[in-house]
Length: 304
DNA sequence: GTCCCGACAG
DNA sequence: CTGTCGGGAC
Image 1 (spheres, helix red, strand yellow):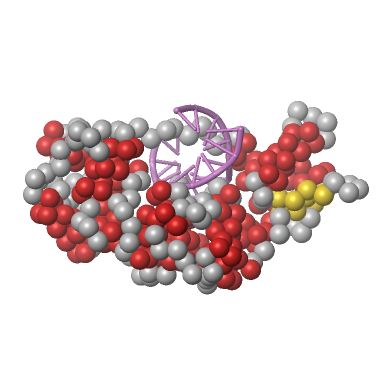
Image 2 (spheres, chains in turn cyan, orange, yellow):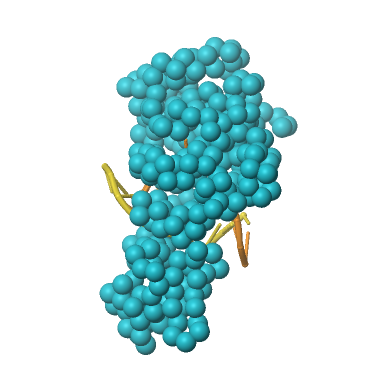
């Protein structure tokens, strides 16, 4: 934390209070905002990574109903968890595996007692800096300032924080009122989610920071670059996803049965044939999502 | 096409 | 530090 390359308002308490009051006045009522159970919070956070929140709600309710705690998730077959993930179109099937593994870690490494600090939470599979602070905050009110794309956009626009991860972390930490990570992190992400959106809704959402906001003053609402995704249609990602979805419908499938169900132009010796499929399956196997059995005719299933 | 409360492997 | 990981909604 050297020179401050940004300038937060002097009357920080006023700025903070304005946001907290705005949040408490009215905000979206997601189910994970009604609980402080660290397991449920973790589930919601992992689901929310790169997936629209509206789509997470249904999946979240179904998931915690089926696997109500870490103990029962850890005891579940991975195939069931990955199958659920796929059925609910949550994307990134690896995250289902992470969650399953993390539940096992809580049981085995933490004696069934959820870790409460960001550093300990980071030890769980699939939990990075964002998720560690989010769980510590929302479950235990014990986190640091979270920095996600929403927070970056808000800080960049409002207070000219430059597009640099360390600087964002410093600025976010400096702005957060000590000991209020639960409310604060919810509030600043809500701001980014409903007011300081890509197309800003400052007045409609009655943004509480209009009086201090650089972008609101200048009209320059440019935001930090978000890396553009390669097209999904026809991508390897798409075929991985299809493979997992198909395998979720069967106990076990031979390559010749799986291939045509994954892509219509599948022909054993063609451009996208057995060779291509084997390679795809090797990756899925390395990711711990499927199991390939080469005794006799090669068959595939979701990994238990 | 673009976006979405990131994390991990190489 | 860069590429990869799903898929629905707009």
